[in-house]
Amino acid sequence: MARATQTAGSVGVVTPGVAVFTEPLRLRSGALMPSYELAYETYGELNAARSNAVLVCHALNASHHVAGRYAGDSGSLGWWDNLVGPGKPLDTRRFFVVGVNNLGGCHGSTGPASINPATGRPWGGDFPVVTVEDWVECQARLADQLGIGRFAAVVGGSLGAMQALQWTLSFPDRVGHALVIAAAPRLSAQNIAFNEVARQAITTDPDFHDGHYYAHGVVPKRGLRVARMIGHITYLSDDAMAEKFGRVLRAGAPQFHFGVEFEIESYLRHQGDKFAEYFDANTYLRITKALDYFDPAADHGGDLTAALAQARAAFLVVSFTSDWRFSPERSRQIVRALVDNRLRVSYGEIDAPHGHDAFLMDDPRYHGLVRAYLEGIDLG
Image 1 (cartoon, helix red, strand yellow):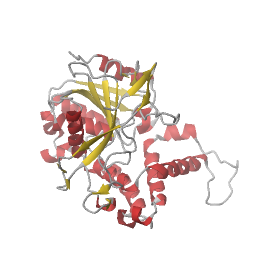
Image 2 (cartoon, rainbow, N blue to C red):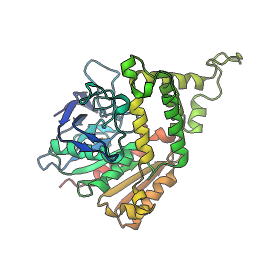
Image 3 (cartoon, rainbow, N blue to C red):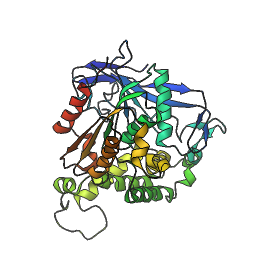
Image 4 (tube, rainbow, N blue to C red):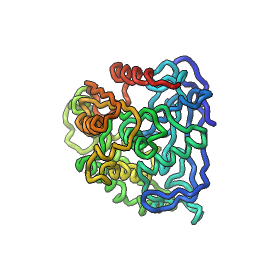
């Protein structure tokens, strides 16, 4: 089992683990995964009653590396390190925290760059499309391997929050609390449109080769850069961009060319270049499709209340005022459906300027709310 060595305020040095699954997995698309692996990390200790486990579900470009650092790499801080650790809102002195890289990912779990046992070559474009429901099924199988019959809580932001919500539907008796942060019950047409433009940037890159670019020794970096730039624009609010970059010209005056002139252009290109160096384009395509497909109400005639009727968990739903991609109104739709089903639900709407990325920020009101909620969970 992967463990972390704790120091004050941090989970310390982390050693990832890999769980191997030989039982075939039938995906929602109908495709069959004959076997697969999931990369994961754990922080804290599972108590004797096995009642203190918390699953953290990751968003689009994150992974199982939620907190801590890797040995010898000071720049490898976990993506939610400000929230998870001893004395932090998700306190690893009390909870046993599990992070997992989803199936189809590119950070150690079986994904498009993995070897397809049927061909002996990387899956590439042949890797099946996966869904939020598929990920939750995989996470449940990992929990079985770890000896966790029920999670005290499942926590996630953005796409991770959709997984937390799905847990309460797929396995209503295996989750006590769901923390659904910066989420929506389904994507709007505008959000699907953003994802499609990003996918088109990737699939029309000459180096894409129908997803089999590994065999050609290339990476569709141009498309992936543009996809990341599009996404990054939607994660920030207009106010956050204005405060951080404004209309500042790097040379102090227009240079009348199409290179980098404004600070915001430099920032977006830097983010795109960095992302294209470590993230897999095939994974990006599949994760954005999973976002598009998520819609619990689809099988209930669009009735979200009917869709959430099978949930048994208690909920904390959190939104952020400046999040225009997953606006507070979308979170309130979830809250109304939960209230209609007479489920226990707390709702916090945080006045924060950071846009959708606010769920990653160290906002004292947001962290205070999460801390207070988690402290109220009875582990008996």
